[in-house]
Image (cartoon, rainbow, N blue to C red):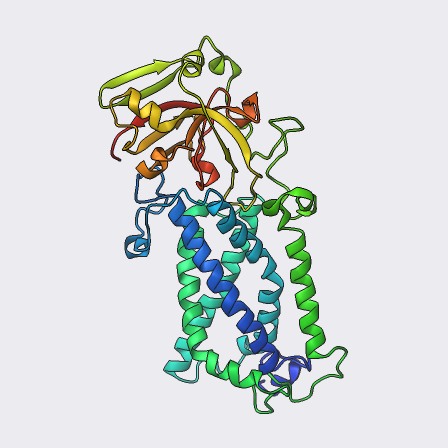
Length: 411
């Protein structure tokens, strides 16, 4: 059966003249750089949620040593998360053609018989299963998250986090084993005749290996152009065809992207009206209740900040105006120059991150606001009326909308 040319386990079954060490090595080195950058930006995105600050923010409580890199996420520069997540998502989508081409280039090895020639060979095959399976899992779940299409079981947050560690561990092991051979293959344009990737009876070529690489690169460039606009904004935002969310609620001062509308979050207009809504602020000296009119009597400050979401889309800088978080901390007994952490709760009753924790360094930043206005106009219901949090460099989900309660103290 191993000599039957009709079976994929037979080398003669695979007849493309493109396959070979050189073609596979070029794709592999591109992925070596790209996937490493994806992993680093993914860890930074995870750290931006400050999962060690509060169980509310931490969706992976059993992470153990995998949380060793966590640190207090900075607030400078204010576009830090916008850049990090834009790179993470745009690069991930751009690498899809490269990943698929790489898998195509080595597919004959998946059918090699016998499946394990030795214990070491069996271990290598298992690592390849983790590598291929983990890579497909990470890319598929990432693309689905960008589309807000959660068809997979469980929460995206822990699935993508633990999947990334499994995939990257297998990726590093594979890279260490294969890098010397890949560098040797790149030094020559002709495939090694004894390679198991080279067909013993190749078909007539219809395109050169360089032409195939240009085709893969063109696919990546097309995905880049149809994705990057969601981060860069401006005229390119209209080209972000693969990032259709970040819904635009229309024109005017409130006419910039959102994920959750007030209707989706179940916000009743009656509970956000002037007569009903009160902000409850709790801290060292007790609790105060503030109406929107009370907040307007406090010193108001402005800051130009973007909103950047984990799915990769972001707004340009919007002009927010409201009360500094550190000034609200001072109302309940804290030094405004050295405020504590804060626990923020929304009127939203269901869904992830309706409650969130912010670190003391985020509260202390003078640009961190309980915003009441944006671009010179009151917040619209979809942007969090009557009040929302806006913090420099924080993920969008931590900029809580429809704020109902602020609890200051060490968390």
